[in-house]
Length: 184
Image 1 (cartoon, rainbow, N blue to C red):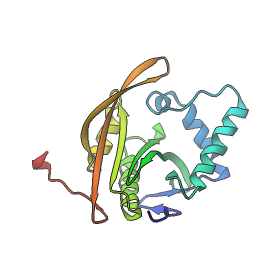
Image 2: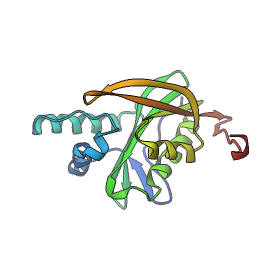
Image 3: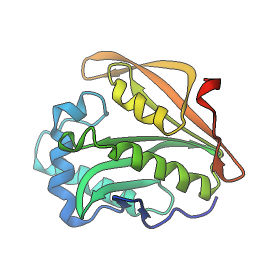
């Protein structure tokens, strides 16, 4: 695999390592019940746990062996994208966007750019999962060419089991496989 890019620049966004100034924005998102309802983030008992969480995410975003980025719009942190695990030439990723920036195409733009970067790095499969009660995330994946994988899992989170649905895209010759809508 090739190294991850230091930054990924799209038309409107920059995917970049977390900076010290991103602390409050990331923690605000991590506390937001609209995000924590479907993106697995622990509850924080105190400021020390919040600080440890931020420092860990910042370190992961700086690590060359992890595909972890803050999503920035005009210098403001509006989201987060991370690897959830790798398996040979496959990778699973997760993402979220601050609710104040929903429905503007930012998640799709960030995920599409991430898939392109992962293809350039040598990954052959990119997968993502979303809780069944989060169809918006599934639509983001669909817009990025990710197809249903026909698999689901039950994940215990916040006192109940959530059905997680998975989508994926196969990469051929360094580019995501294009599928016609008619064939879907």
